[in-house]
Image (cartoon, rainbow, N blue to C red; front, side, top):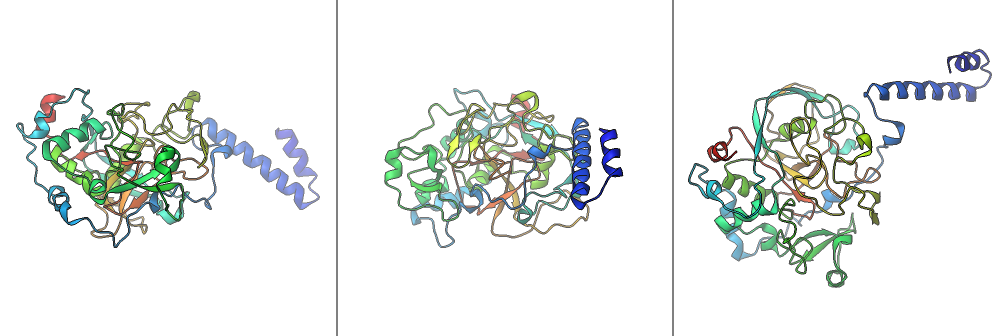
Length: 389
C-alpha cells in the first residue's frame, strides 16, 4: 500500500487524483485507529441532519390540566416518605424476584458530553470536565413489579391515569385500538395518544402487564418517578451522575461497553433493528421492552443503561453548556422540560441515534409514553437496602 501511495504522489496531475490519495490516507488512518479501539468505522458514523423518533415531541399540551378529582397525584408527588426500617418500602412483599438493588458508584472526574455531537441542537457538546462525589444507583430500571409495590402501599395514581391517556408507538397497538384513534403527534405520526393507556395497560385497555412484571414500568411522568423515589427513600440521578454511570469508567466511548455496537456479533442493548418506523425485525429478541435484567451489564454492573426505555433524570433541560469545570452539577434551577437519557427500544441509528452515553432528550414533567421509564439514585443507600442486599 505504501508503494502505491508513493507512486500516486509522484504522478499527481489532476485535482481528482489528489482527492483519491486523501481518501486512501483517511481509510488507512481510520482502520488503524479502529484496531486500537479509538474510533468507529465509517459504516457506524452518521450525519448531523437526521431527525428523531419523535420521543421529544411526545408532550402534553401546555393548556392540558389534570381533572379536579386527581389532586392526590400532586399531593403524593412530594410526600415525605419514611424510608427507615419499618417503612412500607422496607416491608414490601411480592412474588416476583426483587430488582431494587443499588450499586455504589465511586466518584471521580470525567468528560461529560462530546466534542463530536450527532445532534447539535440537543446540547450534546461541548465536552466538559465534571467531578462527582460517590453515589448509589439502581442496578436495574424500575420494573412493573417494583412500581406495583409502591402503588399498593400508597394508593398512588399516575398522571397518565388521571389524564386518561398516554402515547404509544403505532406498531404496538392492536387494530381494534387503532380504529378508535383520530389524531397523532404532528412531528411524529407513528406516536398515537391512546385513551385508557397507563402503566397497567401499556398499549391501551386491551393490554396488560401480567407477563411483563419484570419489564420496566412505562407511561410514568417525571412527577410519577419522583413520587416513587420518595417512597423508596431514593431520588432521581442528576444528568451528570447518569452519564458518568453510563460510561462505566470508559473514556471517549460511544456506548457503555465501547465503540462497537455489537461486540463479538452480539446484541448489548434493546434497540430497533430494521427500517424505522415501518419494520422492526426484533433481532435482539425484543420488539418492545425487555426484562430489566436482560443484556450484559456495563463495568459498573448496570443493566440496560442504554436502550430499552428512556430514563428520567433530575435536571431541567438546558442546551447551553460551557467548558468550565463543575463539581456535582445539578443543572439549571428552573425550566420547562426535564432531561431524559439512554434512548429506548425505538432508537435506530438512521433515525434516532440516541442510545449513546452523551445523547440526551427532553419532555415536560407531566409527559408519559410507552418507552419512558426511570431508575433511582441515592446519596446514601437506604437503611432497608443495607439489610436486604
